Image (tube, rainbow, N blue to C red; front, side, top):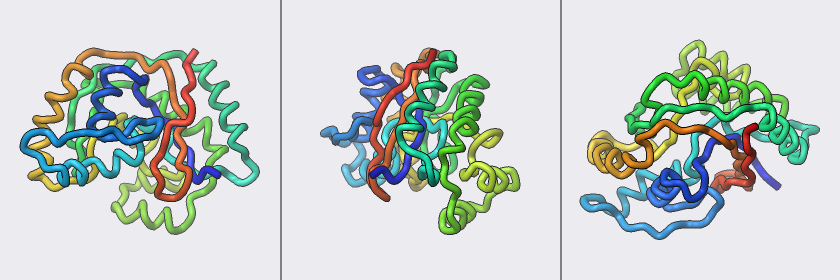
Length: 228
């Protein structure tokens, strides 16, 4: 039985971004570890520390954050709804990506405004909210520990997650929270490693359903849905 579901964008298997990103995280989105060696100047422990959190979620950009299935809803219904949504949604143009430091982690973010990406994420949050079980008190308290702004608190109460709608930022996480010294060393390394795979604008032609089979287990890509 699946614990949580999430709707993500994940680069197509075999694409340069998928190959480089999954090799960096040490794990493929469909599941399964990838053998890797630490880049020059970094220890294996530093790499493990930096990538532990994004590795659990898989290489992705969030469209609808992880959610438990609402009472009375079935996984087959969610799958059917995703198929219908994809048939009605055209591919979305996206600008080139760039490496950026966001708070204490490093991620790939659009190099220019991306209203199409914002609209796609908002549509996913709203359309599939009927499948989301309400956040429990423990989850609310955990989110509020980040000292949320008023708009983020309103999102948390309405949508179960603070960083959606106007607070959304499309990003592909490459590290978890890391200390400033390690972040500085990784910035140059990762900018160079991902430069060729992120230099050009691209199109989002698919969205993906990821599943968390048990609390704390790695998310894995379950199915991809081609946009119209």
